[in-house]
Amino acid sequence: MNPQNNPPQRWEDDIFDCFVRHNVSQIPYVPDAGHAHLIRRVHDQPGMTPLVLTTEEEGVASSCGAWLGGQKSVLLMQSSGVGNCINMLSLVSNCNFPFVTIVSMRGEWGEFNHWQVPMSRATPGSFELMGIDVKRCDTPQDVAPTVDAALYAAFASEQKIAILLSQRLIGRKEW
Amino acid sequence: MPETNIPETTKIERRDAVRRILANRGETIVVCGLGSSTYDVFAAGDDDRNFYLWGAMGGAVMIGLGLAIAQPDKPVLVITGDGEALMGMGALASVAAQNPKNLTIIVLDNAHFGETGMQPSHTAHGVELAEVATACGFESTQTIVDYDSLDAYSNTPNAANGPRLAVVKITTDNPDRALPNLDGIYIKNRLRSSLGFQPV
Image (cartoon, rainbow over all chains, first blue to last red; front, side, top):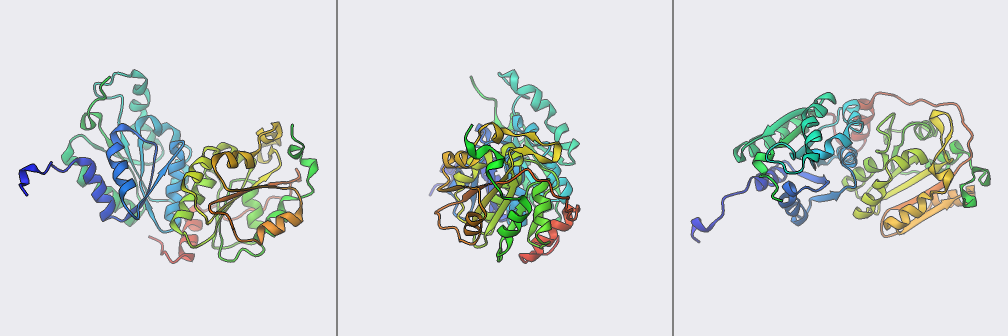
């Protein structure tokens, strides 16, 4: 096989590899185009349970339930869903649950649809208000170490971390 | 309005109901919604496998779903009220999409928001949560208005090929609060330890 024919590893696959390495088994999500490849990989992986949600706060609660039952969970959503989670994050806080969410950002880089902008702007602050640490990935090189570190910190010592995948990383949506 | 929505058609009292539901719980893990459901589950007997909610309204069913997926060989029971279930009604669709056979949801339906002054809830206006669950794809749904049916339901293992939901119509009686421990970290670690997971 000619190695030049192998496409470079995508940053989405870096996230998936971290899930496998850290034994993350429940992946609740409200979809976003920025997560589409990762969601496909989760669906194709035996032993990983994808959970399609009707609203993002459901994934906060299901992730806490997963930990009660001894499994690790990571919530996938886009920035427009972060506000939906606010009160449910009190569950994470009050019980000191580990929590990791990976958020694809809209409304911040070449955004055509300005309806995405207000919640995008409020996303880091919303997490911080509820006691969730915020990490941001702006380049493909940021993704693997950030996700790896977050999963380790969360599940080894019950920390709460939101990873924001910048719209510049994901690429703007063409209309 | 369907007659079953009128609480006067049931003689079931909430605390008796929950005591009967849990009388033969075996190794069942219980998640209970904030307010009266939490008080009723505690009043039936404290247990390491009870996860009491004091907040996070609308989250009980999804906590139960995450638990049921993580512990597929153990029965998981969510006991919650009509108000809490209504706030998380979309969760019934998310549960149906997973179809976990070990998850049972019991909604104690007095058609009112009991903790906040007994304002009528949507079920008083005709919303039937058992039918919502049916429409979501639950194979087993039931509305219970008498103790014999409740005992039969509680003592029968789930025969459906998926989750089940029962709405137990209860009177609007309001027994004294029975208050379990408020410390969520303690309650979390206690439940996890009962399943063999040590505190982090």
